[in-house]
Length: 302
Ligand code: C5P
Image 1 (cartoon, rainbow, N blue to C red):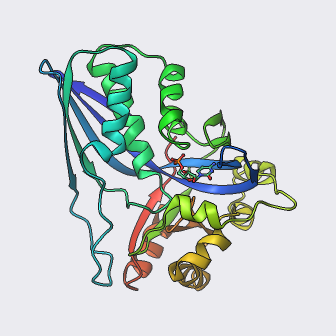
Image 2: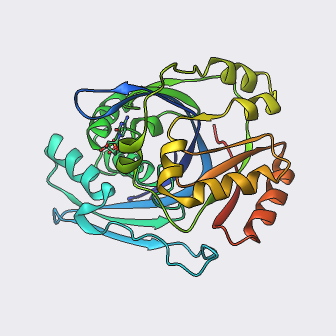
């Protein structure tokens, strides 16, 4: 998160994330799945601005940044508006917990693709909690915000950290990782998204769970080919059964000289590890011309 504050307005740049590793350890009694996942923030940002007011109402406006079309003539997925948006729910929950009488005007500029497994909604919610805590002068600790965040979504607490992390439980128990270099990558969001709940419903927990330890070691040592080989996402077979785009993107990445590729989160976006920034830009240009969705040359941000 990049946070700026001027003239009473707080502005937060909220990054996307990718999952380099995602294992499903089992299904829990509460309906959620026990996961072990390696997540890294990536430099595709939504912008959230927060302006406190004395009126007590929460106003929310959302616009899409100008981005290239998905490439096949379809309209991008709809954004949840008004009180359904996670941003509004996050701010309302914080306001209630802290008995805040003031309101706020929130404005969100979306760049992160929706329903793409890049945690666009989760990062916006984390940004909203940070902005509201600062804008209303609440001085909440990251632990306090994380606790509220976990009530709203499993991926949100990850965004209170500053870099890659292993996340366990539902995803809300975050163990930050240090000493990892920047990874350059290309992410593609196809024209159709996937519902997280549906993908989890269709997934099968691992009979023999894999561990992210070797991948973390390879990343720490800068062995990119090994990082690429060790990418793992247990949700991918379920997503492939629900959307033809996943297998299509896999085939497209197979034809490219990347270190490795995988689906991110519950899909539908897909990413490949590149050797350096120029390589990522080249791969993104090739994929961008194939009408398979929006291609981003990006990098992990720590
Ligand atoms: O926590 P979040 O609201 O992001 O999760 C969306 C849906 O994904 C949940 O309602 C649940 O069906 C599924 N899910 C799961 N196990 C997880 C995380 C999410 O089954 N660890």
